Amino acid sequence: MGIGIAIDGPSGSGKSTIAKAIAARLGFVHIDTGAMYRAVALRTHRAEINWDDEAAIASALDGIDIDITYENGTQRIFLNGEDVTQAVRTAEMGVGASKVSPHLAVRKKLISLQRGLAKSRNVVMDGRDIGTVVLSNAPIKIFLTASLEARVARRCHELSAMGLAHNPAEIAAQIEKRDFDDSVKNKVLFRAEDAVTVDTSNMGIDEVVAAILKIAKEKGVLDV
Ligand code: DC
Image (cartoon, rainbow, N blue to C red; front, top):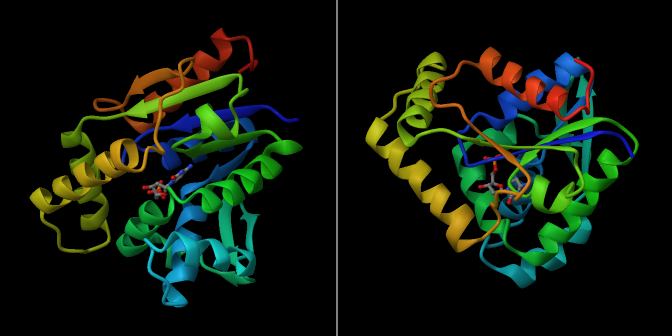
């Protein structure tokens, strides 16, 4: 078993950006587990299966083959041999991923895939249930949070950079809905009891990375 760093937190808290930066810094592999739930959403959407139809989704799972590869340290995700790295990033697939995520058969399949990926290598894995379920023995568990205002500002900044129009009030409503769905309705997002909470509201990427590396060093897990 390699060393695992688990990073969980709500949507928009910066998990993937931070996980990727830490993995690059340590020479670990970054695994973005949200992309896998998004891939299940994409495949079932294409098969015209309703995301709320748990039975239909469970029987479609055998035909869903998800593979992860790395290109210059960046994760690429393949769905039945097709590179869907970009296709899963849409807001619609984010909603779909959230809808398919509570189905037990989906969780079972993806958790097993994620554990397999972490088995023989050092990983920084980000998601919602990494510290509580997937890598419950991980020596370093981080729970990233940020205020709603900070998360809305970051999302607006991302959309502006892509030249896309946006409405901050609508984005705030979407983020609040996802928080409610992940934590209360679908119960997939939990903070592990032994996780260290890092509130990134007033921190830049480098500061968050440094704070997490400091936590790892203090725990004696890494010599960085
Ligand atoms: O991190 P993201 O936005 O790509 O995640 C999309 C959805 O996938 C999220 O709303 C809930 C689900 N998810 C999950 O249930 N468990 C994970 N480990 C990662 C994501």
